[in-house]
Image (cartoon, rainbow, N blue to C red; front, side, top):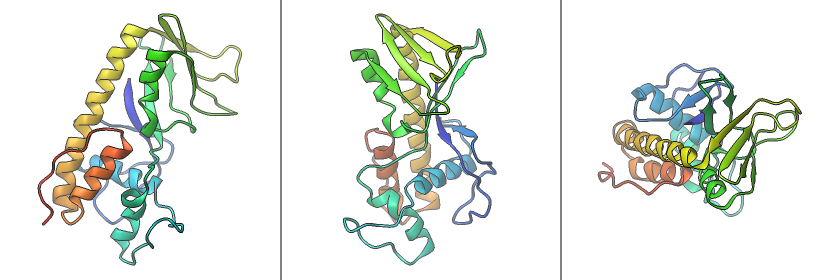
Amino acid sequence: MQPVLEMTTTDGFDLWPVAEFESFGFLPLSGELSRAEVGTAVMRMAGCNDVDPDGDRPPRPVAALDSFLHGLLTFDCLFVAGGLRVTDNSTGVTFLPGCCDGLEDWRDWQRLVDDGGLLGFGHDPVSPIAERFGSIVRLTVNAEQSDSPVIELPTTELRLLLAGAERDLVDFLALAADWASNQLPDHCSAVTAALARALDLPTLAVPPER
């Protein structure tokens, strides 16, 4: 199980160094990313929230960097395209995130394990769903297909996978905080706090902004 960002192209982005990436791929988040990949992840997370302010938020700044970061730093509820990717190595079946339950909602998986029910991650034409049946969680790759591939996991195993995914997110956040302290020194604390909120993680203590 991997926390992943659904990517867009990085072509033309010049506010900080990023790795080359094409649209519709997935970037796994962990403590193993290069600095350019961390920059790519921050670019994508800020881009997901790069929406013109409404009446409840301050106006968008004029400076290009401040303008691009504005949504990330001012939205109360942040959106992060992506989610948790699960691969069954024995069958090759991969359960991919959908469009309706982003990475910001990854703790919904924990509630599914604890309380049962159903999680829907997308809609027609591809509707991945997760359901708990007693001590088993079934992941259906596409509920729109009667013969869709599925992955079945004991709840005990899924809890371990979720703990690993959380460690990956915590490790990524630590990398991103260090990256921001060097790449965005005037915004380090605010950006790190926003990324923590976006990933539903505790805020890290970071050095004072220079």
